[in-house]
Length: 212
Ligand SMILES: C[S@@+](CC[C@H](N)C(=O)[O-])C[C@H]1O[C@@H](n2cnc3c(N)ncnc32)[C@H](O)[C@@H]1O
Image 1: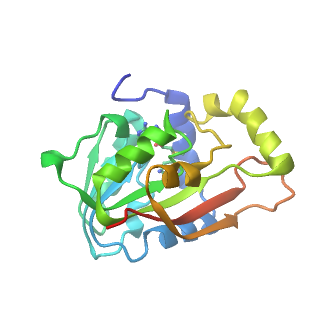
Image 2: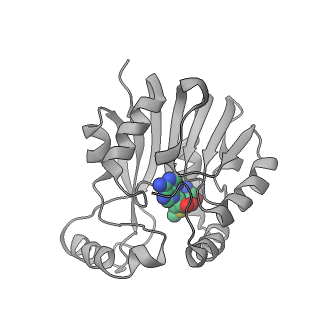
């Protein structure tokens, strides 16, 4: 497995999409980062959209972004961030913390839908967090009924190819719980009208805590 990703179409598409996000998604990003402190690992940072929203109680962000074209944008965003951010261009599966040091928090937004094996990544993130540390997540998740059927069709056809391996029907919170995390403050939010036939209209936002 390569340590970087090379998907020029998705990189261009995501750069445009990230620059035109709705205020509803920006509000969720701010909520996802609120109250964080200490050293943070951000997984799959994309163009670095989250960086501007880190509170000044964060002392350092190590941001992993394996898609080189997106990482270039992330480096620019890091230079303008209110807290120190270092961008590393490898997949989270290839990431090793220097000196085996653990993080106070891990941030995942719109990324656990795209990693190859969410169970393995959840276990890895558990080990990278200090006991008592939190993983903050803002993710697409598996819906129910007709939405679930739409998601399965999307995932089996064009969606992952168009959107950098994004799988819309993932039981992300179950993967986190199976890895040993305790879920706290978990809730769902719709950022588009429920009647719209879009597989990613619903988000899960919450905190997954590594027990002390
Ligand atoms: C939909 S974008 C979201 C970007 C960013 N997290 C955000 O909230 O704007 C998904 C990101 O996950 C990254 N990604 C995909 N697979 C990854 C992996 N195995 N390890 C780390 N990042 C990954 C992609 O390169 C892309 O930047």
